[in-house]
Image 1 (cartoon, helix red, strand yellow):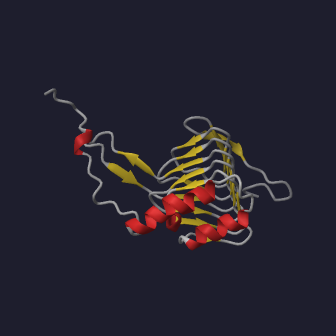
Image 2 (image 1 turned 90 degrees about the horizontal axis):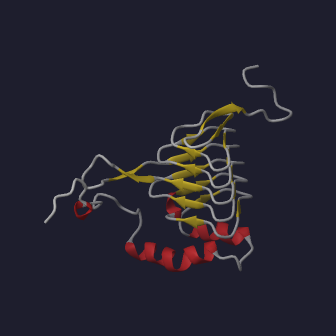
Length: 192
């Protein structure tokens, strides 16, 4: 038998728990998630009630569009008037917090899990993600495990945020890097 430097047959995530029983996870996967994702049900309020029923903390006025995927709703908090666009994927093996008035555009991927590539067994790593109030994660952007997108910050279309994005900064590209400060009309410039 050949000897390999990476041994996926030795992968062990027995330390990880989904946070709910296998029965609750199965009911979510086979019933809750298909209803959440469905395009035939146009009402955001129904999606919000569904997420609450499975343990998510969902504020007032939250908008959730069709096609959204949530791994574990009990590890999700959405602040008042947060928006989650079509086909966003909240892959929350760990807690994801989306602040009030924050926006996830279409196709955003929030990834709370990764693997330790230095570990021959490819060990699982999970870290929370925070999208602070008034932040915007643009279409098809990715936010990586452990990242905080600061208040009013922007991760531009297609950006990959592998590090924290400071408040009221715009970051773009892969890896996402500083482009400019975000100025919101009608508010004083930052630092003044």
